[in-house]
Image (cartoon, rainbow, N blue to C red; front, side):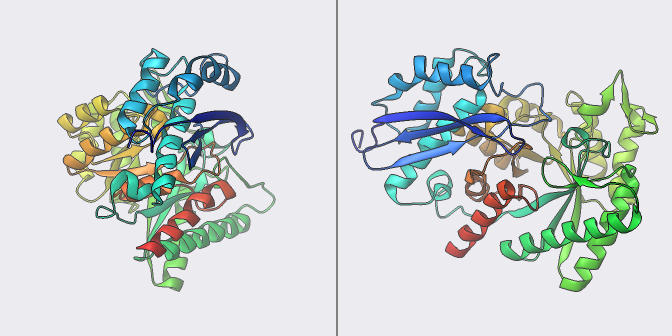
Length: 402
């Protein structure tokens, strides 16, 4: 077994993400197979996630690999993913991967799993989750973007839609139709004003947040009527990004913590939003818990920056009933096995997982496999754009194998 899965070589290279920024792609070679993975980067990041790159950036990550990783991992048993990932952490020597960079660690970790899956002749989702646990997630995608994902956009970072038709392909196509309809409505309403697209190919607009939400509600109503499919609306506030000195700073007003909590509740109770991510600052576990207690029975309350895919932070959230779902991003924690540890904790608590892309993405499609392997409620990966469609089209291929 050891010889069959022995790592015989590895390499890394610099590639570009969807924002045109450099990132890392890694390859792990076994005797008769290879695994390749590249890792995107977020513009909106939690303070407790691992460092994407060391101080010297991508070049320093590559140097670290050549000096400290490349020769060391030759001869390791790739089938033992946990040991492989622990070796990466030990080689780095820090808790936040600040020496090699979390994107290098993530790319090596997932590339290792891909090499094993390719050797066995099975899909990545089957290696990670097994054939018996497979489940198709619902795609959820950004249709109007603001915050750190755009220039001069809404304060709220993401307005999302998710179709519930029972078919991944139909869901993907319908979400894209809503995106197109929103573009048409914005063009009609904002004659003489510019509209554009942000990092995730979502529309950007100078409309206020609730006006933007009204546009989405109109588009959803029309496309749902045409198709007969249920379409739900979600919002990622990414509230830490506009929280300053105890206030939430919107374009035309400042909200206190209590006012922000009431506003978030109104998104569900008055506007029918069913998915709310990062409604408060990433340190406010108590506030998250208050929102979840109030509307969590009829809304998915998702923690991203508050958890950063970190098992210890998720355990704290579970203890406090801070949410009922967790966003999952491998490069927030650095390795596939640590990600699996977090997912296992979430599932045992009866909460939902939502596997997510990053705003600066590559064309790698591994998150589609992880969403299936983890039995995730949703896969969050945009609605259009080549690097987003790489994941969505892979989800369609996976659905055909079920």
